[in-house]
Length: 140
Image (cartoon, rainbow, N blue to C red; front, side, top):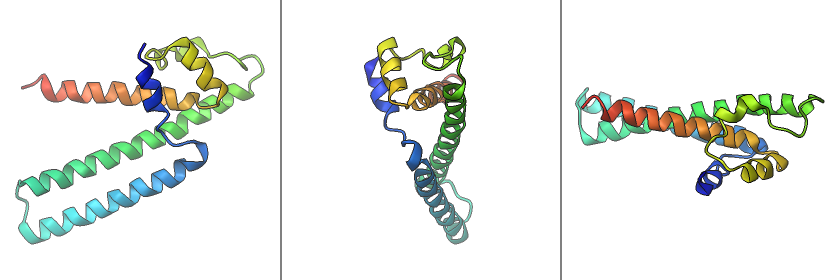
């Protein structure tokens, strides 16, 4: 559908760099958690612009850790498919839900490069961000 989605999905870390990315995000989460704790100790539980930024940062870093964990889980599925002799070389039809935003040529090219898990994980990111946006906008 949109070629930009493929480029965005390729921004997710490659197979050997996922642990390093997770550790960086986990460290950022720890720093934000420490800053939030220090802010609450100094100013109490008040709703200020700074507290909104800190809590929002905690939410975003936790979501990033969830996405990286999902990427590792999807990679295990893709690796299992690649080892199975009857499914080698073709994308299973059940995965079409996770590959709907991408063109067939992009899927085949990325699968040949061994990065199909990134496409599937980025679809999870798209669905969850749209869902969270709707959950925030619709009740108001």
